[in-house]
Image (cartoon, rainbow, N blue to C red; front, side, top):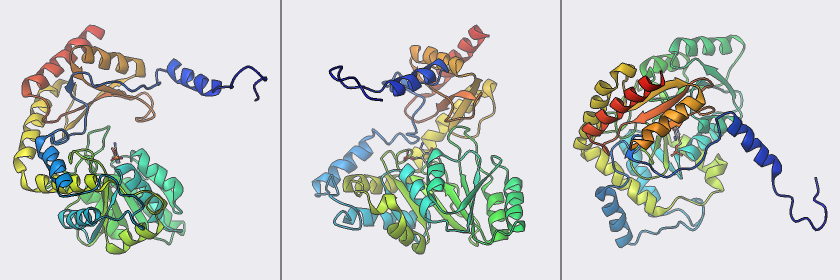
Amino acid sequence: MSAAAGQGRPGFPRHAEALDALGARGRRRALMPRAGRDFSSNDYLGLAASDLLRDAAREALNRGVAVGSGGSRLLRGNAAEHEALEREAAAFFGAEAALYMGGGFPGNVALFAALPMQGDLVLHDALVHASAHDGMKMGRAECRAFAHNDAGAARDALRAWRAEGGRGRAWIACESLYSMEGDLAPLDALADVAAEDGAVLVVDEAHATGLYGERGQGLAHGLDASVDLVTLHTCGKALGAVGGLVCGDEVLVDTLVNRARNFVFSTAPSPLDAAIVRAALTIVASRPDLREAAWTNIRRAHAAASRFGAFDTQILPILIGEDPEAVALAQALQARGHDVRAIRPPTVPRGTARLRVSITPNVTGEEIDALFADLQDLRRAAA
Ligand code: PMP
């Protein structure tokens, strides 16, 4: 399509049309400012805006840590802070080695694109995160899904692949705690499936790191030691900072350093961020009281929300169904001062739009009670 001379530039009418079409289906998204009390962040330990981490950032700047890395890790961008963080993270999470990436998203992309090899199978839970899917699309292995949290289905799928002649390594991928369901994976059962086949278990601990495990190491920590394990820990949730840590055997981290395109060809994360994550790991390991405060709120929310379902974790999805209803309810709650967000397809399956309520120490017990009282009130009015 070309614009007639003199009429100015053509602009992007097809993009505008596509956005309008999303809008007509109630799916157009827009950035919005924070509105009210925090019932939607992943700041599960309340560290993101805490003095603890702000002081750590100032201390790092005072000892001369750089803001920018200046290049890729394989060139001049590799800083002492990155390496120190990776040593400390590997020790904390119980792995041989760790690699710090700019986010959990690029961490998953690197992992799934570069580790499974030609002839391998990636067998993944049907609900794994978009970043895992993007990595899988770039990788060389065949990928198959198994029904959410169904270890029996994973076993059947793996046996079927072997029966069809699959000879490579299998990589069983799951999250330990699902972001939009708020439920926990059957990690022991999945580890058994992995052990039977000699498969690798890949666990995305994005929503578990910091909040679960004896010192916040996550839910995969201490799993069957006879299974090869790779874990992903995000630093932008309970750790209150930014980044992603891929943890596993030295040979795997070395493979990422050599083969993951988004590691090799990307500017290294900020050394300052690495320093802040180091401090966050120390805080998380040494401050069980932060976890206790978080769990006090989480238990209060479970009690206050019991009429909306049975919940196990800090993430309480309130299933609504249709997109416009979910959006309207979120807006009504926001108008009452609760920052709750609606989650719609494609983030969740069609017809399962929901409110995703997350519980952090950034709110009080009374504020938690008030949220669920208002929710009940609004649901009753809408019925
Ligand atoms: N994995 C899961 C399960 C996630 O929920 C997210 C982020 N929402 C990511 C990975 C990506 O992590 P990050 O936000 O650090 O890029």
